[in-house]
Amino acid sequence: MVTVAVAAINVHQSILTPVLLNSGVRVIDIRTEKEWRETGIIKGSLCLTFFNEDKQYDAEAFLAKLKKRVNPNDKIAIVCRSGNRSLQVSKFLVQRGFSAVTNIVGGIVSADDAGIKLVPYH
Image 1 (cartoon, one colour):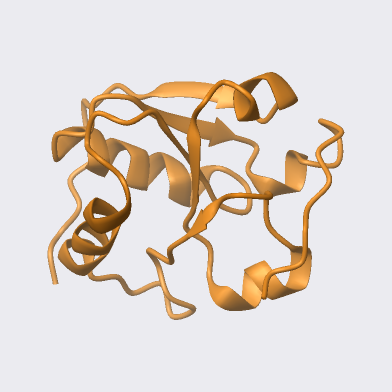
Image 2: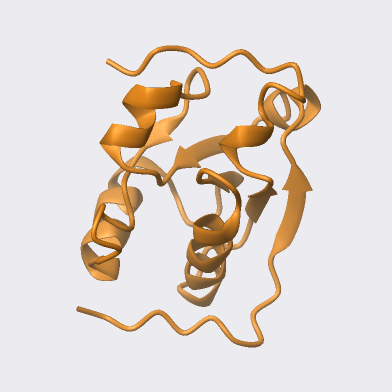
């Protein structure tokens, strides 16, 4: 297991809005499968768990899976339930060379307030 150091790393932060989702950003949903099934997901998002239900993680395995799907220069937005886990992961990704990372403040729970309809996870 790799320790995720998050101090002194600045990450762009944004609330969840239709404008953000239509900006060409790729949304990475780092919640657990259980969470995806309970609430649904943002249409078109890449579902890739970082912290498991026991709050454990394998940062290197996550990074390897992510790099198979997105380029470190791609615009990505990281979302979790409320914005706490996504901030940690966003900082980790910036530290690991991702150049256009946005943390979604307020997480998936803010989708309804933003007028964003979630779709079922299959």
